[in-house]
Image (cartoon, rainbow, N blue to C red; front, side, top):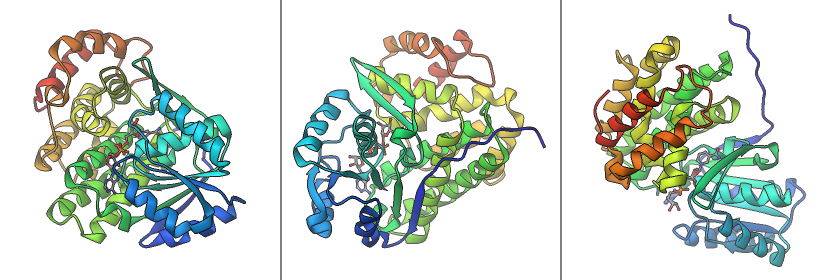
Length: 352
Ligand code: NAD
């Protein structure tokens, strides 16, 4: 056994079907009685229903959560927090809504109950990314780690199939990078492998039948496992590239992860053989991790080309430059030529 360091994060997790009925008790257990519910515009109706369910425990709904956590939206939400005198936030939704809850917690220290409805995994991390003036910066602080995570599989049944696929691949990316992280440790590596396997088996079943509760449950479990990996160990070139592409070029988060992942894996393949072996095993015994991830994405109908989701050829040079400046630790050294090739392959969707 290699020596390792492991930092556990404090978090209460409730997982199951129909768990949403426990929300009021969870809010009260935090000592709170004035919950502000957060959603995106798209999930406003779900937020309204949640407020009805909470009755007098809910003091308002802020339904303007936005991808990449723009600072102006956070400031607007903070005014609403002050006006409603909320004493906790309830984030119902994907990473965008959870990001807003974290941003509010960063400024106010309000406790958070988070109800994830995608597979992005933000609920399990002490990380917050915020965007201002076209640059996304992330920080790690326990102030933003949600106190309670309430997973209700039933709420994921409405996640549209295309978002299900890209969000699931986004989760897999956390586990892939955890396996070759500089902080890798046996517990997280085990969870990473399990998370990849769970999602890789669930996503095709959900595609066949989006209301398959067992497949949805496996996918949500996989998302939690992969989210824990993201929260526990440092990420590398894949996440650096995706933050660059999302923050600077406003590319959609989950699609960007889906497209870049096979190419980032290929970049690191020779430098991280143990991680690659585990990824191959989790994908059901494929012979090459990067090609296996690419084939999984293609079989699920995920986008494969950055040029199809809004990146322009003339943006590539700037993306390489940003990704190579202040790089995250990576098992293979960050070389501009290699990153240029990686992005060119992702731009055109070449199979690694
Ligand atoms: P998202 O939260 O923007 O959700 C995508 C869309 O799907 C939204 O319109 C949302 O309302 C809708 N949706 C969500 N769940 C649904 C459901 N069950 N049924 C119907 N519609 C539903 O997208 P995302 O990919 O989950 O999150 C992306 C954001 O999360 C990015 O800003 C990213 O940076 C952040 N993120 C942060 C971390 C972290 O640790 N800080 C981790 C992962 C992602």
